[in-house]
Image 1: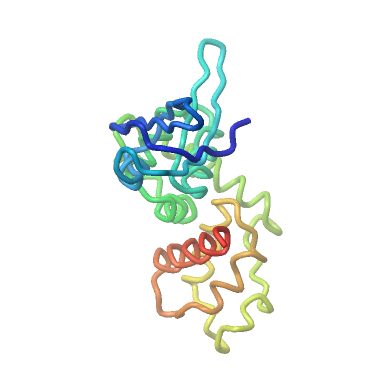
Image 2 (image 1 turned 60 degrees about the vertical axis):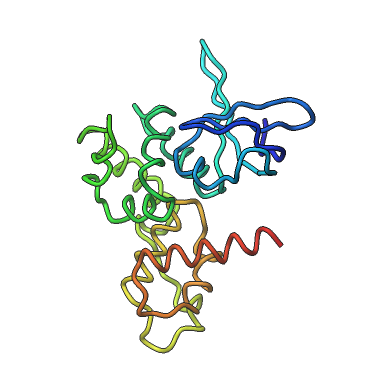
Length: 207
């Protein structure tokens, strides 16, 4: 399976990028968000990929970040949500907003994407929250106070807990993100905590 592509950006247009590696151009369907994040045509880029195989076609999808790829894979795991709908949703929201929307149970936000009806939106939230709960203790996130040792006493806010739940939607474990959340300014909003934690995690992964 192709994990990622690194090479010259040969083409980019709405919903599609072509990355040339060793003389071979790989066409990757993608979100508008990824298209906007990549550089100018001719620059060197890296995209993280998912090979989608079905009876009548083999399609390659590519994304600018591992978080966006993770969101894509979560979405296509939901019954009735295909790659076209998944990329449409990710064209309308960032990975941190996606995670927060699922964690907060805000299905109405998903209906703002063209082609996503109320039933599909509710299914996305229900199935992905169930997956998150299945990976946590007792069906909910069990916040280990020791993980937040760096935070001032009593400073583990509801925003921290919500951010932790959202980051678990993206596939991170409590052990990975809780120490980071504990060091952040506890007055930050949930979405800002998610964004800052992802920035720190990305920085660690690129060292």
